[in-house]
Image (tube, rainbow, N blue to C red; front, side, top):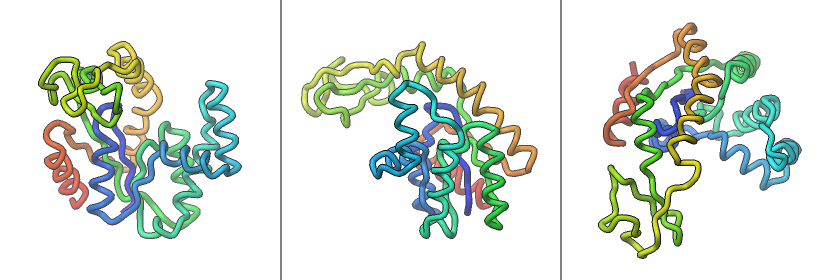
Length: 215
């Protein structure tokens, strides 16, 4: 299957992408992984992307599209893939369509993880990270530490990252609504959109997604 995964920040795309890719035996291709791989390997696209990133500028669509095209041509993606974070806007969606058409392929589904904005803010703004070990993550509501502000595992101080503040989260949501959300209508018009609720336990959402994709 060839699937695009969409949804706002905090919808759990990364978590669901990993489970779905495993269940479907296809590679999980995320924008973050594409950038890290190309930059670490020193590819031409990676060098160009890094120059923009170092200057604090957005990486142009053509570079992101080029990275995605290269990755989708790898042998492990021959029987399908799950795209996470790409396409990020309608221009990228159109480029993806053109790439697939040229290769004699097409998308099977676009899975939209639906979650209300207030829930997104609650999920992200409630996260607390351990200063001593960033792998230790808590949540003031869903996974509260035994002692407020103290890591259960190592006793380190828990803090809220700047990217997780409510103002920052709402700004990220505004960017999502402006830039990415239009691809939902784009794919809906093609009859590819499958929308599921992203509320509940991780395994419940995965089952919901698998059931929807089978239909």
